[in-house]
Length: 224
Image (cartoon, rainbow, N blue to C red; front, side, top):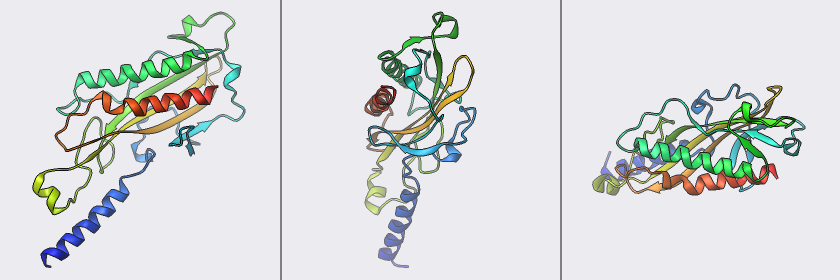
């Protein structure tokens, strides 16, 4: 096989690999286990036009509640920082997302950090949510691990070492009626951050801030 044919085959294989890793929603094999159940999740379109997996109880009415129990987003499973994503970045991601979600909820509800803080007579629902992964991999999500987006690259890229990488943040959450425990909403969402220039570039919390803001703006719209 001559060099030109090898290059064409390489490009074709690369295209197939890239096509297989560009899903806009979380794949089933990427579910973290954070949700009590993933039954009933269907692909929906968020108010901002982004695809998301969601289930909502029939008849759920956000206006029938006035209080939300929410502390902060969890990290699930236990994160493993590495040379690309350090502890500080993970903490910043957790803090920024938690503050953003809390701010959106507070525009409509009284937000308390525990069930003990629920005011007497309040109608409360409980939100639990978690960051379940950060990835830029074409081999499936791995906790805070970034690998080349393509297993096969063109001759120029291979020579220069330049490999663009898409950053992805995975979030899962569910809302229950606090008193009855009845499930109200389940969401699994994949957020796309900034594109990295190469496989050595550090991943930062700033890479995801625009995507996090978009997600919480969708939350604002949905609970109005």
